[in-house]
Structure formats: structure tokens, C-alpha cells
Image (cartoon, rainbow, N blue to C red):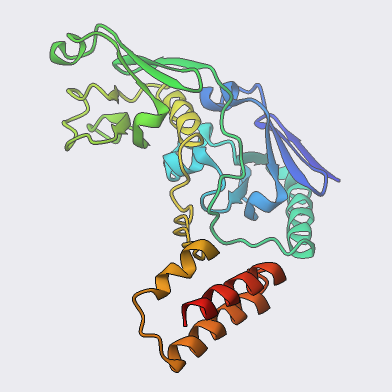
Length: 296
């Protein structure tokens, strides 16, 4: 077992999972505070590293691509204070951090964990219900329905229709982006059949974010919705293979065939192969053979 305790939080590794508990330091962002304890199974981990610094180092846990809906919707754009997979480490605890890294890496090697991308989420996402106010709306999600309730900062054309409400089943994509410089961020939902989305300030399915400290909370809403949608890397379902014709239908199919010796042998060979492969039982094979011979 390995453990490192810092003002920023506590990380514990028991050989099967990394347990992350946020600290109470003022530098811990609101997202981490609301998300609370996170348990990352070993099979969801793609790597871990420690980066020493003059005053403080950083412990970083890298999850496999597609393992966590929060990482999926934020795309590495969370500010450091909001990233649950980073831990600020005081310089005098660098030895403990390096020991922690070695413990996780050794477990990854022993368990032969594939560091490649996932085609299904391995993390459960934020618990619901959720309701956060940031930017021009309050976004609420109960596990099935999303409600965007506009506030006084919302453009009149956007809020004139009242709150916007839709179900997860109607969502084709969800995206969160932080503010950058003079450009505002957003929490955007793209619904099935929707045309090209207008600018966030006019889009009724988008919360416009203004760069305040509550903005990352909207990423929790995005992640909670995303984990209930089909995984973006999920394989396409295989088309159903047609079942063999029932015996009663197989014999009539011969009606249009010429009654010659070659056709007789071919049909007998086909039902024989079905019998040998286990598709036809002995009784079914006998019945099919009799039906074929009766046609010639």
C-alpha cells in the first residue's frame, strides 16, 4: 500500500485502485470539492508521473483515453486547481511521491494493463442529481432530463422561450469549453436532428460561461450526461446474420430448380454440411433428405 497526504489532497493506492480525496486547502477548486472522493481502478490508468519543482512538485495520474467521461468532455482543458488527477506535492515529500509512482507502475506491469484507449467508460462519472449555476444559466440534471434555467445575464432572444428542457436520449453530443482571453466558454448540448448551432449567447441548448470560478462545475454536468450516452469509441454492432431456412421452407425452394442429378447431389451435400456442423439434428437431417429426394 502507498499513500501520500498533502494540503491539496490525499492519494492512496491499495494495489487495485487509486483513491483520491480532495484536500481542504483554498487552492482546491470547486469542481474537486463537489466531485469529492474519486476511485480510479487500476485498469483505467494509462500512466503516472511525478514532476519535481523548486517549491513544489506535481503528481499526475493519466487515465486511458475514453476511460473517464469527465476527461472525455473536458479534453485536458480543466484548470489545474480543478483537475482531480493532479496533486501538488511539497518538495520535502518528493521521495514519497516517487515511491507512490513506483508502486502504481509496478502494479500496471504485473497486471499487464493495456495503456491504450477504451471503447467503454471505466469510471462512473459524477453522481446525480446535479444543479449548478454559472454563466447565463443554471444547469440541472437528474440522470434523465437536463434543464437549463436562464438568468438575468441571458440574451432576451434566448430566454424568451423559458427554460430549455430535454432528455439524454435526445442528445447527440455534449461539450464543455473554458473561457480563453476575451472568448467566453460554454456547456453545449447538440440534440439529434439539430441544425448548425448558433453562437453560445443565442443557442438555447448552450450555457455561455464568462470565465468565473464556478465555470468548471458545468463540466460535471457534461460528464454526468456523457456517461449515459453511447461511448464515442464503442464498436458498431455487428449486423444480424440471417438464420438458415426452416426445413419446411427449404424443400419448396427446390421447386424452381431443374430436377437433374447435379442439383440433387448439391442439395444433399448442403443439408449434410448443416448436419455435420450441428445446425441440423439427426431427425431434422433425415426429414430434409427425405424432402429433397421426394422432389426428384
